[in-house]
Figure 1 (cartoon, rainbow, N blue to C red):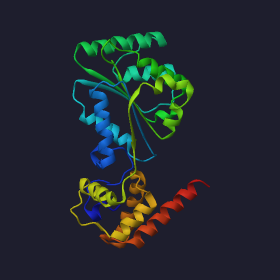
Figure 2 (figure 1 turned 60 degrees about the horizontal axis):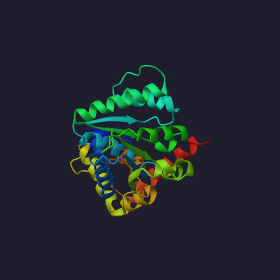
Figure 3 (figure 1 turned 30 degrees about the horizontal axis):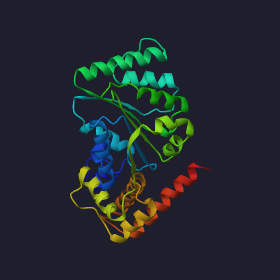
Figure 4 (figure 1 turned 90 degrees about the horizontal axis):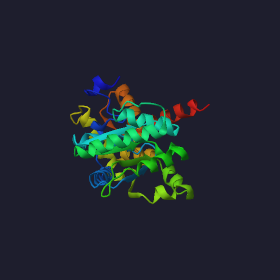
Length: 274
């Protein structure tokens, strides 16, 4: 509704994981650097954690855009699968047609594919999003995949991406062997207070804003107080804020607009839980 009024090409505050809108804060750039290091150095296991809405999935999508053609990837979003279905999904995402629904055959096919990629000079990466939802049996299967290696290097780089609960799950004594194999770890923090305005204007610029839309320092403070620096919460608030701004035909967003917008957002959340 407000796109035409503000002269925007697209919604700047969608909550979808669009890498073209990724604001490379210090923590997001560090996360990508850790991922690239783990992949390029063939470290085997990489663990990336962060709070809900911190931008982990967007980071994964941005990572895929930075990898070259010599890196083959499988990105699994539905982590809440039984181990055989998980293996089947991994094979299919690598472009492998599963022969039969057999764990042994799945592993044999995957190993053959990985050896082919190694011979071609390629690297192979498996990314599992929302990895905190992985069942214990599936995690054990993932550990087994890390056994696919030559004498000198890992055939498969495995990236586990999840909420902080993932760290708690991996601390289980039953998963000690898996935890010991994780050589790269990073936690995606929320944005700092001084990054909020940069984040907002970055997204507005990508969406087509020509610096017509402004936020007072007090408005930014209010957005930070509400969102605690979590990008998804910033997006939810700012989408409602621009709708209020459009209704009142204003380009400078002040604290009162932010407060009214947040009150309405919180009211909608409350209604949805009744």
